[in-house]
Amino acid sequence: MYFRSLLKVHSRYGLSGCCNLKVYIVPRASAKRSPYLTARAATEMNRIEKTVDLQKNGGLNCSQAILTAFGEQFGMDAETAKMLGRPWAGGMGHLAETCGYLTGAILVLAQAYNHNDEGKAREEVFKDVRELFSRFEKRRGTTSCKELLGADISTEGGLKKIKQEQLVKKICCGDGGIGQDVAEILEELLS
Picture 1 (cartoon, rainbow, N blue to C red):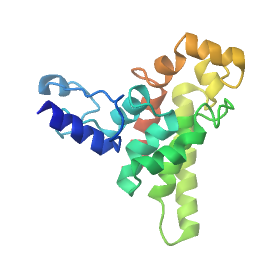
Picture 2: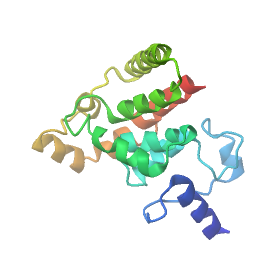
Picture 3: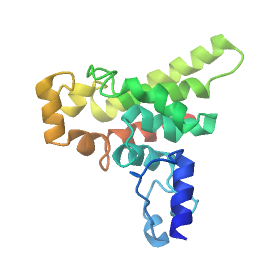
Picture 4: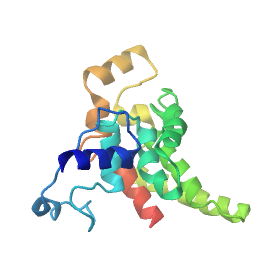
């Protein structure tokens, strides 16, 4: 049973060759207390949890994680999500600018409004991008990677601080972290 679950999780994430992914078995009783689990089986993660877990335990950067977790509903496979999300981490190519979770979420929103009327699609996606940023700024005060982390990943000293203090693990993919915030907002915008 354990190995079947492990294979199911690996194939669902498109990580057939990955050994880094952890599988969590959550008892049903504790699943009822979690505000993020849906009516699905307690062992399955929703997109919010999956986003955070893919960065924390799956070896993906922030943008790749949110694209993988949310892109699947629009037909994006894990390898394409990984490729498209690759350059956006660390505030766009480690420039410490716009948060990689936000840039990944923008790419998800672009897929959500992919229909024949280009003018209408742009209007709808622009509206939701503005809403995404507005809600995120209300929660965090900024969209800048260096301000969110409290260190500038584009500098040698900042990168050293981020690694030594494990700021990505604590701030981005920790409980109540940036990844959870962006994924929650994106989930609301898509519903």
